[in-house]
Length: 120
Image (tube, one colour):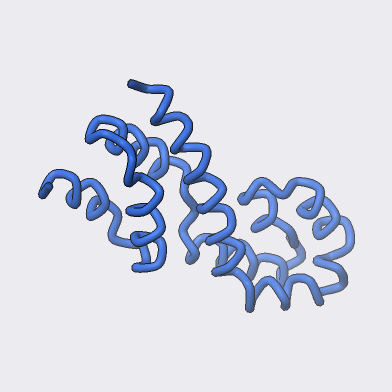
């Protein structure tokens, strides 16, 4: 059981909410599958601090980087072309950056779950 918990402890930037979600998401997986899950998840997950910095770049004229980083390419392009919807979208993203990251990471967790299940 200690090795199981150490798999989650490898990432110190993980919030309790994310830790709890991942613990429930991997409940039916074997130890090897959990290790595969966490290996893939940790390599692809987004850190809220990185998304916040990318959002702040929108005020320097490069809006939408945070949307590109989270796989929202159409919205990222619209932000880039319109200057973050004339700054309003960038301001909104400043307040929502944690939920943007949580949505991305939850979607990623579902993908990683299927990868881990396929890896017997």
